[in-house]
Image (cartoon, rainbow, N blue to C red; front, side):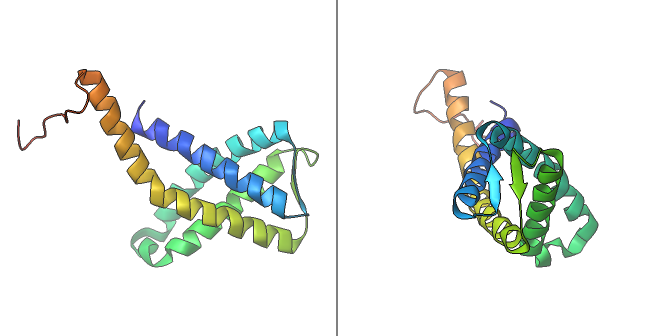
Length: 145
């Protein structure tokens, strides 16, 4: 599987878990099972589109605003997901529910970002070994080839 596709799938799973946790913890948040799946897909696509846009807007100052970038993209993605979903399927009511939902999902994205690069790299190595048909043997690098 291509590393970007794998990263997207892992992101969708991570976002799904955090949205379910927020739904279970917050009384003002409602997510049905069917629309929950749609909401996870909408959220994942939205955050994948918003993050590079916000990074581009911040330009060279992005490193000083990393946590703000995460909060803004999570909040923006929650807003888009809520607007594109019926209220019976995915809804967030009340300012404090919005604040806590944003924080819960943001913490999940921080954890996801920490694990993503390592997981994708490890999966890429396994796929490469499988393709070569030599389990346990690492592919030659540019330095050894």
